Image (cartoon, rainbow, N blue to C red; front, top):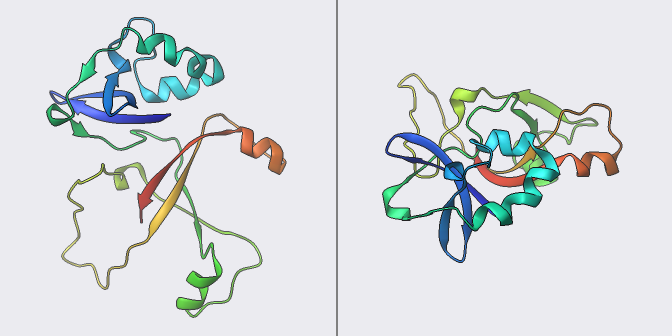
Length: 158
């Protein structure tokens, strides 16, 4: 299932893309008002999406502007040097443990947004990233438990 966040008339919305149509779930009575609320609703909310789709209005894609996939995440944790080729091209050895660093909410942008670059920035680089959206509060999980905590995936540009 493909979920999409978007702005309509300057207001944030979210919906489901299905059969090349965008259905606005944020306009359905009884459905969570935001994607964050849907995520927090867990499996019960996900199970009800097909029910909500029956009354969701279709939005014309040319009337909306994409919004960031996650508007206000609690944390943005990143893993550096997360594959051998990247470590090699950086001239670094693969670390024994993941190198974790953070990003901030104001670093988020939507598809096709302008990325503002400081005039004081030095050399720039970019990387395509797999973004894993964790759908529940968790800690000290086994690998099996960790995979169950994943809400979904999206792509990013770091």
